[in-house]
Length: 136
Image 1 (spheres, rainbow, N blue to C red):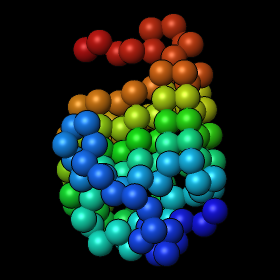
Image 2 (image 1 turned 90 degrees about the vertical axis):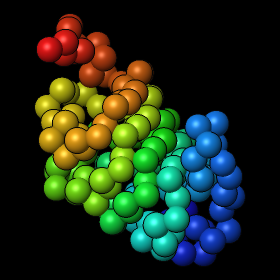
Image 3 (image 1 turned 120 degrees about the vertical axis):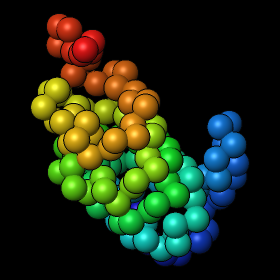
C-alpha cells in the first residue's frame, strides 16, 4: 500500500506509552517511506512497524519527530547522514528484526543523529558480529 495523504488522514493517532503523540502506520504493507510531509509535522512518534520497508530514507523535515518504530521490516540500507538533519529531535529508533548486516551501514545514524539515545538493533544480522557493540 502506498503511503499517501489519504492513508495518513485515515490512520489512527494516539498517545503512546511514552506519552508521545503518535501516528500508527503499522501493518499496512507499505513498501517505502514517502509522503510523510503530509503529516504536517504534528507527530512526535511514527509507528511504521510490520511493513515491507527496505531502506531508512526519504524523511522530510519533521522537527517534532522524536521516535520512529521501524521494527519488523526488511531494512538493509540507511540514507546518508544529511537526511537526518531533517529530524533534529529524533532520539529513539527501533530497528528490531530487520536486515542491517554491517556496522558501516549504521555510520549515517552516528553522524546525522546527534540526539540519538536509543537504537534497538535486536534480531538484525549485525548483532552476530563479534563485539558489534562499541564501548568507548
